[in-house]
Image (tube, rainbow, N blue to C red; front, side, top):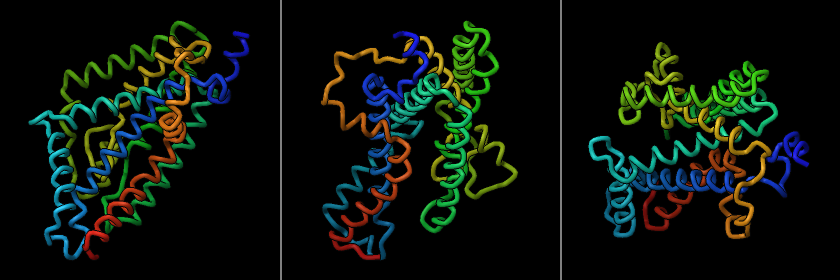
Length: 284
């Protein structure tokens, strides 16, 4: 029975799926959706020709959203500053855990890279509404998965190295990130796209776009997740089967379909916010 569990990845076994990983991923996705919803409410009045006109309801929502976003400033280190770092860490950490379950991370990373490039194309078409996403979270995850896959393949024949090298790599990357304070200071931000900075956009030295996540230090979180998955889920079974009840189903549903929610949520929320503003009397 144990050998069968090891051979068959848990993501193909719905009955024995590690629900807690889907749950945590779902929480991170829901937090991301709330974060972007606040961004929409903070900026929505600028979408309309009569946006300067006062409206008690929209003004209250906008004021709350702006106050929320102001807590993300490095100088304040408020709620959003810490919440953003915590949820990004858990999301990327869980990407690494999922990599430890996968049979073919090269395929997963390559397919996600194709999706992320297509997503960039869509954002280019929406240039009048937003800055294009050149290297966002999807691109970062795709490249991180391929990096993890390369290390996994290279160390496959040495079991202890295969398990512990991701831990070492992850700790070293995050140590230097904390030491150099790249965790709380932004990279050099370009107002306009600069092709000469493309490598910087990818590695993390330069930033551009509506959604930007450089490979470093974010790939370190994925490596830590890879180690955790290999060490804590050797037979790919839930560590908390007793709590696997109906209460978590809505959140785990979101976690199982995280990519779909990421691709669709910004458009859906913008439509919802726009509809609310139109009903409140604003016009394009």
